Length: 247
Image 1: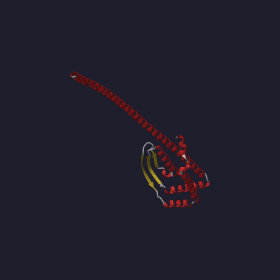
Image 2: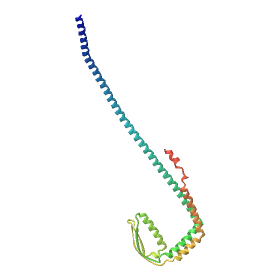
Image 3: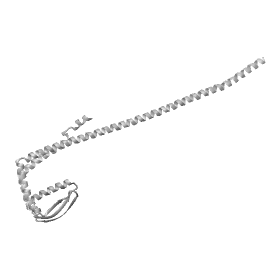
Image 4: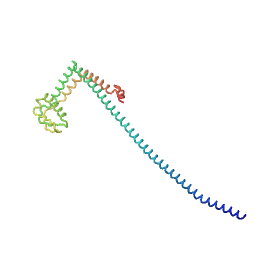
């Protein structure tokens, strides 16, 4: 009986020892599985991070491309606006040039009328009379002049030549020297004579009392007013309809 109990106790201890030894194996096995699982999780996490980084890089590239595309679109719109603006300016310049051409045409038609020719001859006669009486009787010396632009010097010298044609006798001892290369104004002038305001008053009264002068002035004013209103009219031409065709 005692031996049987001892045998049972011994068997229990062996079972416990076996369980203890197996527990180490089980724990080792579980620890190994836990490590592998942890490694797999870490690997997947690294893979996920790499994927996230790639996605971020791709997203940044897409954003950069989108920004460049928007910038290019803005530049295209800006260029199109500049082209429209240039075309609009050209069209307006052409329109104003045509208005000027038509205005000059009407001036010429007016200048061909008998009334205009008669009025012009009258004014020419009175101005010549006035200049002869207010211009110095004797003038001697010289003047040397020149402007920054040679063409302006040439035009001024041309106007002076007209005065020489009218008052040649009084300007025999007066020299005008144009300088087409330098900007200059120097000279010496000695003038003798007198100015009588009565002559200017007489000419002014004659012009004011001349009926043809007022009629011609009124016609010129009418032409100027007509074309001035046409130039200021913003609705003279719808440029935008034509410009939209290039959009």
